[in-house]
Structure formats: structure tokens, C-alpha cells
Image 1 (cartoon, rainbow, N blue to C red):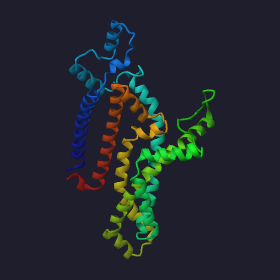
Image 2 (image 1 turned 90 degrees about the vertical axis):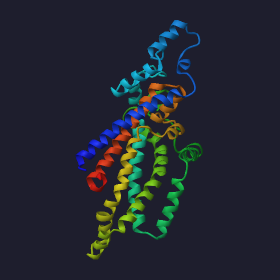
Image 3 (image 1 turned 30 degrees about the horizontal axis):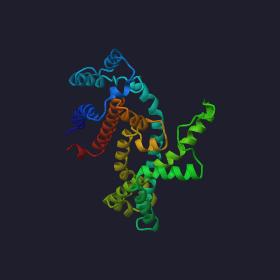
Image 4 (image 1 turned 180 degrees about the horizontal axis):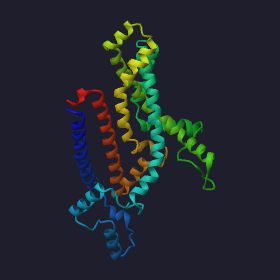
Length: 325
């Protein structure tokens, strides 16, 4: 199968998967217990006011008609109006996506850079005390629940030591409610960012180290590494120019897939640290039965995950023709 045919096949798979995701989103959230109309309305409203509100959000229509309108809007990029905020969903997502990208994008990049370096070093020094210690520590943090780890970090460094704030995005004076500007704003945001960033980086670093180490060990067993050593090529050059570069392929695939999940943020992490990102917005929208906001958020997440997954597959197909078979 040629690369062009492979791209067409993957595009068709993405479209079918996206349609299935949209259908599941519509069904799942409407099977949830509770009524969004009852949560939106004031008990003191008159019947005609209630009917007007139901009509405004399209909740007065039969379910099949709601589904047709929902599919039409989602496929044309119209994410609707939030029940909870009475604003376009795309505006709410635009406000929330920045903090999430800042926190989880930074954590993802730092965790993968350090994971690649430490994993390669551990594999190169296989059997040493440093490698054994690294494996034990990595397995410990890899198996640790993130929500528990986040609470422990918050309790130690914010509540006990008071090195970091208890939560929030920062950028303003809580006493006067005046927003900072310039370097003072940047410094305050970074101050609030530090603890959740450290927590996420440590949690993600463990898995990246183990993945890179295992991939590196498989690469070091290849014949071309033995040949390079037989030619007298320096060990450092073999490690970085030959072994590490080829061992990074599975890690880069994992990185590409992780990019798709950045937008969703960490629901538990953002809740623990009171970070005003997409994760906390999803929690609030779920409790409020805000269908448009939940559906719009998951829709964007699904698109990004499918796109970045497809990019990783195409890169693999380009680098390794056996994938196209």
C-alpha cells in the first residue's frame, strides 16, 4: 500500500470515528440522571417564561429533532450556547484553554525531555546501582494515584511549608482584586503555576523514563549497534547518534498522542489546585448538566486526539514502510 492510499484510509477512519464519538456524546449525557431545564429555571418563573427558556435552548423539541440539530451544529463548528453561563461555548473554551495549555503543555514537554534523557542514560548503564534506583523510583511514582500525590504535594508545600499558594491562577491581588500588569503579572502566574507543574512533571516523568529505557534496551540489541562498536565508533556517539535517535520513535508516538489530551487538562489535578482550565470547566458543566459545554469540550478533545494520533501513524508509515502493509 502506497503512502497516499494509507493517508486516504486513515482519513476515512478518522471521519467514521468522529461521527461515532458525536453520537455517543449525545446519548451518554442525556442518559445522565437529572434535568438541565430544572437546574436552569428559577422556581418563581411563570409558565410562559419557562417555555421561552426551553425554546431558547432547543429543549422543547423531540429528542430526534434535537439530535439532528446537534449533529448539524457540531459538524459545522457551531458548539451552541452554554446552559450554565448563557454564553457561546466557543467563548468559554477560548478563555479556559489558555491556562490548560500553559500548565499541561509545559508539564508534557518537560516530562518528555527529561524522560528521554534519563531513560537513555539508565539503559546505557544497565545493571548499575543508578539504574536499579531509577527503576524503583520510577515505578513508585508511576503507580501512585495522581489525585493522592497532588493532595500530598499541596499539603506539604502549600499548607505546611507555605512555599506555594493553595491554588488558583494568580495574576491579581486578592485583597484589592486588582490585576497585575507586566512582569509582576508573569511572576505571580508562574508562582501559582510552579507546584501543579512540578506535580504533573514528576507524575508523567516516571512513565516516560520507563518507556525510553525499554525502547533503548531493544535498540542496543540490534545488529547495527554491534557493527558500530566493531568499527570503533566512540561509545558516546553510538549512544546519541545511533541508539537514542532510533529508540525515540515509540516515545515520540506517545508524545504525539499526549498532545491531543492537553486540552482536556487533568480534571482531578485542576480541581485539586483550583486551576481555571478545561478540566475544572468540564466538572462544573457535568454537575450542571450543561450539555453544550460538555459536548463541545469532548468534541474538541476527540478531534485533537484523532489528529495527533493520525500524525503519529503517518510518521511511522513514512519511517517504516512495514506499517502500511
